[in-house]
Length: 225
Image 1 (cartoon, rainbow, N blue to C red):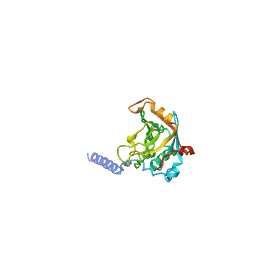
Image 2: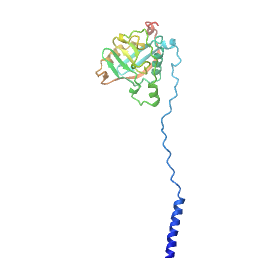
Image 3: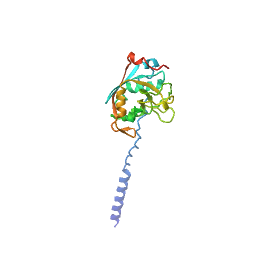
Image 4: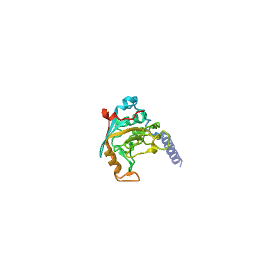
């Protein structure tokens, strides 16, 4: 009996020392919330351009229905023009669509989330950058470009609209910043495409947006400040 007791006690001591010798399992480090760091504000081509420089630049849209050419009015809406030129020159408007049409009134584009390529974090942050309101004396008539915005002040971002009719109720409230010089027939075709609740059944895409020096004839009838 004594030997059996010693044997059991020995087993107990062996087991206890084995447990004591075990190291605790290393804990897996808590997963960090890997949110991307805020994108640094990147310098864009027209960030420091003056009004005269911007006035000499025209924008061309090569759309699925044809080409639209536009002149800019930086004397009336400098920040709206700067924003538009930057979006066009950096390729951010490429593959976006005219996602809203109001028959006989406007077509609206510039939503970066309509791009056919993935919207990166940087593009998403750029899409949320807001602009100051720039109401001015340019009348909202056929062919005029103006910045779209919400009811809140200074809430324009990247969306713009082109008028196919008149919008006197917008005068002095929205930032008219440019005008179509060629291609209004394309604007009309986009405006007449089948739509439901202002959403086109097949939104027309801007294949390529380009910034080019304006031809002299494009500047003849620009409105004076």
